Amino acid sequence: MQAAGFWVLAVAATGAGAAVFAVDSMARATFALLASFLCAGAELLLAGLSYLGVLVVLMMIMEMLVMAVFMVMYMMNPAGLMPMTMTHNRRGALAVSGTAFAALAAGILTVPWPGRREGPGGGPPHDPTAALGRALMGPKMLVMMVIGVAILATMIATIVLAAPRGRYDDSGGAP
Amino acid sequence: MTLEAFLLLAAALFCVGLYGALSQQSIVMLMMGLELMVNGLVVAAAGFWSFVSPGAADGQVLVLVAITVMALEMAMGFAVVTALFRARDVDVTDEAGDLSG
Image 1 (tube, one colour):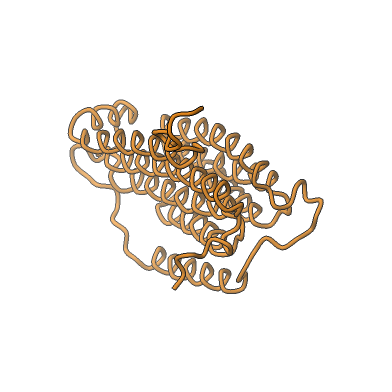
Image 2 (image 1 turned 30 degrees about the vertical axis):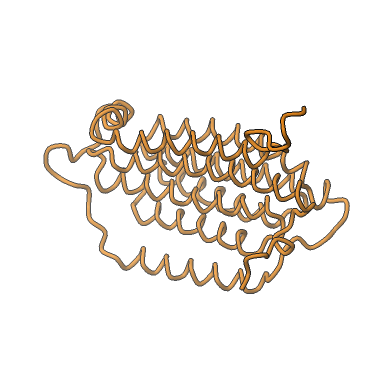
């Protein structure tokens, strides 16, 4: 049952991901991408990561709605009304990605992956969310700090880039 | 469900994203390809956590880092598109090839 669910979601995630670059409207592409992310989030839930799965689902809904707004702003082909090609070097890209997938799949199927670690702490914790929280507030605190600083730097940098006069109003103060 | 199945899904998502990142003209569509590639990383990290060492939180922390990368990548990408569009009225990659050799 779980395995069947996994494969259905996997095919849906990949299919929706492929649809992103196949549909002729960028708004439709945004929602195809959202569907792909939701399927990936459900795969995380299947793997037992309840907190991270829900986090992916909620975050991707928000992110794709923001993306839809930008899509409308920078749309090359509004509502698919003007059929036009939005790709370049399509054959080369297909060859590169196909080769990459073949190489990755060959590696995945031939490498002898380690089994689940035995001994104390080998099995899944009773509450993976609590384990993640304890790790982030303990031995993985550095990761949390770097993420925090990276988010702050991104907020400042995006405002510098996107505001018409930059963060410190280069034009001399006149509004 | 096996580790191989998770990794195959991750590879498929990564390669679909790679195709998009290489082939799309619109910068926004290119960023959607990048998001799909990072999404593949999220699925792979979840698979490794679940099937190799669920007792340690390392896999979960990796998923968290990848999700953060996704959000930051999108924010910076849109800021760059906005700056580029404001300065030069450009929204396709072919017209932003200043750094090509």
